[in-house]
Length: 182
Image (cartoon, rainbow, N blue to C red; front, side):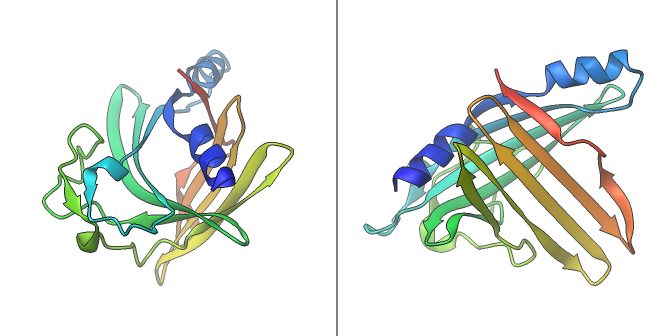
């Protein structure tokens, strides 16, 4: 679990892309101001099996473009496998508001009530020289593809996400969002 703990330690906390956002603004480029607040939430999950070796993480993502801010919360399970670190997505627990879900608002939930996302292909990460890199491609529907690629280091999180519908990008940016610890 040493690798798991190092990985989770790198990706949990409060991050934003203020430095990158300011540079993009000065260059006249449209780019979102983004924040990630990633918090381990095993303490809010009842009846986790005794031999369980994973960490559930609430990811609170906030994006602001042209003065409009929206949240995109997620629940992930991070486990260590022979192949590397695996990030699996879970549905926001029943009874929670999918628009405002956060670690602070999360109510206690039973482990058996958690449902793995069937649409999200788990992302696999490998470590090389203290940097974790990985991602996945998910087929959300016959015409919708979601691509995720991330690189985590002690200095920042680089996140590339894109959504394509019928082969055309409907979400995402040419450059990864570079989050630094706040």
